[in-house]
Amino acid sequence: MTPARSSETALVLFSGGQDSTVCLAWALDRFARVETVGFDYGQRHIVELAVRLRLCERMMALRPDWKARLGEDHMVKLDALAAMSETALTRDTAIAMAENGLPTTFVPGRNLLLFCFAGALAYRRGAKHLVAGMCETDYSGYPDCRDATVKAMQTALSLGMDRPLTIHTPLMWIDKAQTLALAHEIGGEEFLQLVIEETHSCYRGECALRDDWGYGCGSCPACQLRARGFALFMAQR
Ligand code: ZN
Image (cartoon, rainbow, N blue to C red):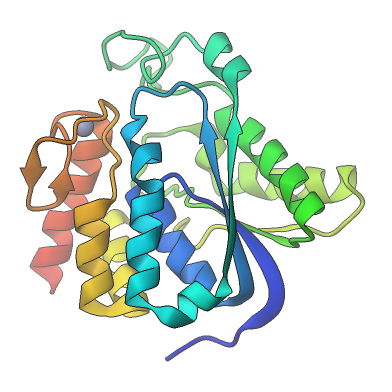
């Protein structure tokens, strides 16, 4: 069943990864107008950004009603974040657990910065909603993906810009298997297959190796999460 549609505009944080792609479809089903924003902060999995436009084109080919609601795509370059970060996503260091228990792929404060830029962009574009793929169900433990952090950010942005801004995180309380089920629920088998085939989440930016669950190195934390989610999803079908 198609959900009731808001007459307002939403801005989706769209990286080209599995989660943000499902979020984009979720938003296109709910809002009259949807714009997208991607961030380039020198991440090693730059392939995610390269697939964004092709992915978007294929989604629109699938659903003309989505195409009618899709607006501009914005790309924000965040060189300062790359320069500040000494972690595995942006530097050629091993992906391992750091002493504080967080994977070294954690870029401190990354999502806080992304929300600030997205909030400023939303203000300029007249969008009252942000949609983002953060999830604290089966995640890597990043504190800036947690629901409490996102809620605090929503309050800070609404106060700081003196305009109500709602941050939607449709994947917050579901696991990767349920995310795939949600993709199927929103866009059917064709969209599910597109999500598997065209989205990239691998921290190493590996795009030559194809497994059942999509492309990736298969061994980094993002690939392992994705592979586990896919296996569980298939087992539950
Ligand atoms: Zn990988």
